[in-house]
Image (cartoon, rainbow, N blue to C red; front, side, top):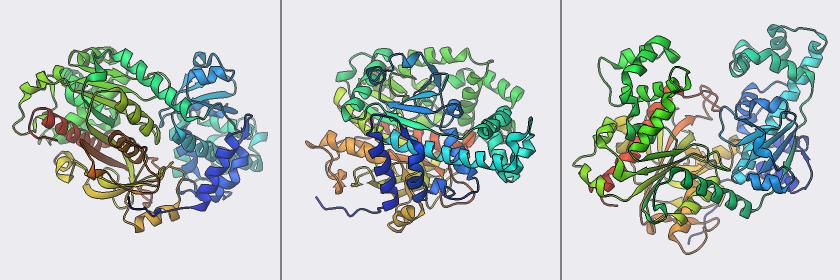
Length: 568
């Protein structure tokens, strides 16, 4: 094979990573303050204000949104792959602690109610994600604490919101980010910051590849027992990495079964002011937009007490048509769905799925194939998961990866379709035939643009990049920045090759590609844009446009293969 030249290398980022990995080998607690200097030195794009006395409010909010609410009371953070690992290292009852969740990151976490947070890590990517977030949070917390002391807030009995804002020297727009995140607890949270410095400690309980593999095995075995689909080990599989809502909605059609109820909820509660959007769509029914609105309303309705009963009813409806969902298996906070194609009823399909020309739907009844869809994991967990699943099922008929990305040349809501991926984990550059092109997605995308023939780079973490790092990639024509495609391609390489994936090479996957491979990324961040950055703006309803347009393309491809419209 040709030798690949690394596209980018950054000594400051490498130094930071070497520092925390060497410290985490210790059997004792590691103080996060020992990482602050190397963290600040890498000048991360998401924390450019680390060395400044001014509060980097965007970096603080970004980190806080990806940590559980109990983080203000946390001192010690334990890292382990499974309950077995925690038990082995002196924490036998970890899963009896309180379950805690972050608003913007899926990860299994438990809090002891005092000062200890137990975090289940699925791969080294969780370490690369969690350590910089904790360091960022601590740096910015302590900056705020110092400003409160200098302003004299700690001597006041009941400071007002305006006092906190003035002490932090934040304008209204920046201070509102804290109020939006904390809501009614804003004063309480700021008072906690004023009361004491933050001094996190980390302790890695186990870090071997064997521990990661055991955790993945336990996760998969539990999911298979929970969904009870027969003969999974022998049946052909279409592997999909996406989310837990799009495929069941598109294939099961439960939202249409209660459409009148959802529209009543819309006009009564008007979530996010979407009545105006509904009225805009009604006169000229745009292709798929009204369906997307219904799916979003279904999620909001089931989250409300008025519609909570539909959670179990929706699950029962979908299982009738062969759609089985396991939302929180052991070890990993990565949901699993198994879809039996033979049990699907095209009468319940989203209308866009019928846009498969000459499909012989009767052939689905004779199919023994399954769709295995997982809630997209973080970084190297993707490699571990696909490597394990591909060894435990029948023949793979396709691998389809749908995920979020940052773009250097597009806008939030666009869709990127790469055929080159440079992976920072393996330093490989993968060349492959992407089964999707712009024409497969564009008809179903209303607000964005589809860009195919792109080059993607899989980074090790959202914080482990800076402007110099990104500029080097951009000069080389890389415009798509994400975290899973490279690990998936490494697992796929091992699925079709007799040896382990190589390191620092150009890997021509297309030369040996025996089944469908599709990679689709929808843009959720534009790091070079001042208008939208740091992933701080939730896509909410309008994010449905790109996520469903890409999910439609994936399901159309699978259905076309299974009904004989195309052959792989």
